[in-house]
Length: 390
Image 1 (spheres, rainbow, N blue to C red):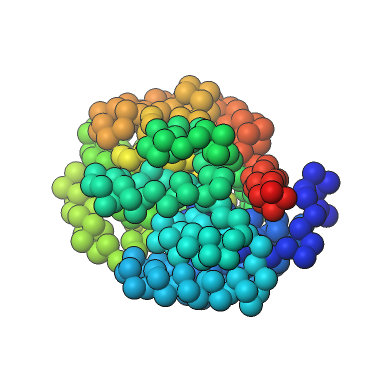
Image 2: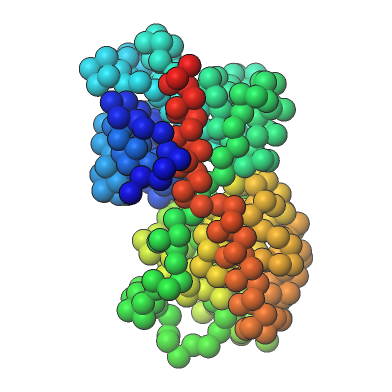
C-alpha cells in the first residue's frame, strides 16, 4: 500500500542515472527510489551499466536501460548525453536524477536541452585538488535541487560549491527494516553463512565484522594493525571477518594477507569476499566495524548494524558521527589511528554480553527513529513533486 503522504506520480516517468548497480549504498538507494516511484504510480527507469542489483531493481518495478555511463571519456560522455536526450523524448521522461559525476554530466546536458528538471544526490565527498577536478565535481551541485545524504555532506556541498543552502535538501539514507530485522534471521541462514565463511560453530570467539569493498580507505589494513597491537591473549578471544568485494584490487588483498601473517594473526582474520546476506552477517557478528580513513558521507554500515541490534565501532568523522551516539550505540575512533582503534575494540570487547546487547538495542531504537527507508523514499518523492510542479 502506498503511504498516504506520498505524491501521486501517475503518468510521470523518472529516470535515475548511476554508473552501475553493484551492491553499494548509492546503488541500493537507487533501487529503493525506483520502488517508491513505482508504488506512487510512476514509471521508474534507471540508466547504468548493470550489476548485482539489477534483479532487485526489476523486482522493485524498475527498468534497467544499459548505457556505458561509468566512462569518464569525454567523447563517451557527449555520446551518452545525445542518447539520453533521445531517450527523454522516446520515453516521455519528466525528470532526471543523477547520482554520480560522469553520468551526471551527460544527464545535465540532456535535461537542460530537453528543459526538464534535473536533480542530483551528493553521495560522497569528492576530492578536488586541481581546478579541472573541481570543475568535474561541480556537476553534482548543478541540480535544481541537490540532495545531501547527511548534514555533514550538506555542509560540504555548501562550503565547496558555494551554492544557496535553500537548494540543498538533506535526506539521510534509509534502512529497510523489513530486511534488516533480527526476528527474521533463521538458524539456517546463520549456518549457511558460517559454512560459507568456514567458521566452526563450536568456536566461541567474538566475531568482529568489517563489511565493505576491499579498498584501503575502508580501513581493513588499519584494523589488522589494531589487532596486531593487542596481546596474543586478547587476540585469542577474537575473530575478524573482512566481508567485501576486492573489485580487482589483488595487490591490496595480497597486502592484507601479508599483514595478517606479519602480525601473527593467521587463523584470527578471514577475508571472505562479497556477502549476499548482510542481515545475517550483522546478526552473526558480535561487534561491527566501519573505521574508514576518509569521511563517509553517511555510513550505512553503522545504521544497518544498529538496526540488527549490534554495537558498532566507526571512525569519528563524516556522516558516521550522525549515525553513532558515542558510548550509547557504539564508539568512535580517531580516524586513521591504530592505537585509538585498538582502544575502541578493547572497550567493546571488555563489556559483558548483556551490556553489548543493550548498546545494540539503543542503536536499533535510534536508527528506527531517524534512518528509515520510508523517510528516504517519502522525502525524495517530495523533491520530485516540488520540481515537477515548478
